[in-house]
Structure formats: structure tokens, C-alpha cells
Length: 116
Picture 1 (tube, one colour):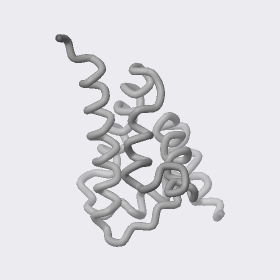
Picture 2 (cartoon, rainbow, N blue to C red):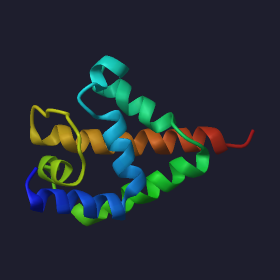
Picture 3 (cartoon, helix red, strand yellow):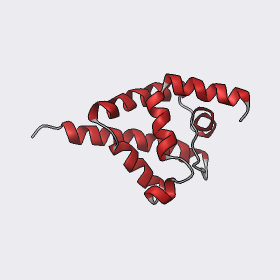
Picture 4 (tube, rainbow, N blue to C red):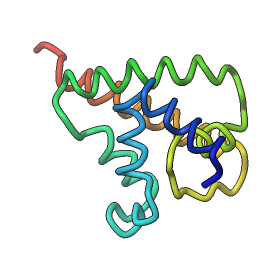
């Protein structure tokens, strides 16, 4: 890995350690073997950890998302920040992945905290 790319990943790991860990654990080269599909990996990633842990990931996700702005094509940012092995067919697939992670985290947190 080029020195500059490693420095960028180190920066991302320091700034968003929980999100970096989630991306590396669930979206590595074995995600399809472990979870059956990209959607399966997204679903599994949103259920892992305690409620506080998932809230902290969501907070980091929001900070990361605001740092990349309104970019439609997140592929370069994802590859720059996180060691993921997902191959995207088109630019919007990367945005759908990150939005899916966000949405699943929100749904899980709401489901766990709703009062009857």
C-alpha cells in the first residue's frame, strides 16, 4: 500500500475507529461467504454490539458522512478510508451501501428502544 494511502487509512481509523472496525470486519473479501450477500453483511453489521456501541457507530457514521459531503460517488472515499473489498458496479452502489448501514443501525436502535 502506498504511504499516502496508509496515512489516510490511519487518519480514518483514529477519527472513526468504530466505523473503521465495522467496515473491515463486515465488508472484507469474505463478506459473501460469511453473510451470503452484501445485504446480509449490512444486516449483520447493524446488529452487532450493545445499544451504546451501535449508537457510537451511528455518531461516527454521521461525522464521516458529513466529511464526504453530498458526493454521489463514494467509491474513492470508501477505498481511501476503509479496507473494504466490495466491488461496486456503479457509483451509486457505494452510496447505497453506506445509506443502508445507516438505515439499518437506526432501525435496530429504534426497535430496541421503543416503548410499549
